[in-house]
Image (cartoon, rainbow, N blue to C red):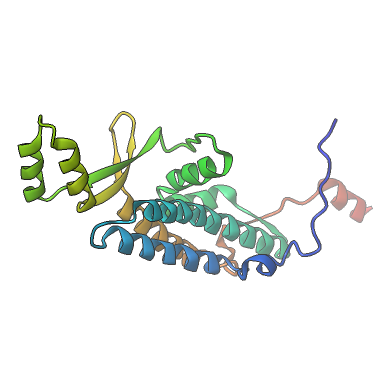
Length: 219
């Protein structure tokens, strides 16, 4: 049995009815806010809202994937109006140029959406929460190590510590600091948008002529 056709909603081309947004640049603005807020919270004075930082990191990944999806739709529509089609290979090359770690963002976004680990080609990524202790804190932890005071001492010092979030491949071949990762998502997405305006036809390819239609027209 074939797939059942799903009719498009009458408001399909008006996402702003639910989102207040209808442009790829609008989604970039959301991504940029998430990036700035993530950096601000992670670099704030302790105690740090780790859960809030993780939520913002997840949202930034979802927004980055959405920016490229919305831009693809804009380019496909513009190409169609010009009697052409979008050169998908060239478009992917643009994404690789400006957003080299988009596969990692897509892995996070799709894992979040499907509740199932998705790799998306980045390579067995895992997120790590890294506690960063000051030298004085490490001295107090070292002094308490091996004693019945260690658990309470660790809890006290951790509450005043700073944290890093990082993605690491299981084989430790690469680690990506989450702050730099999110910052690059925002700056790279804006460069991608600016370099690929729907009015620019360099990513368009002319649709091949239909030989049968041409023959019919010439008879």
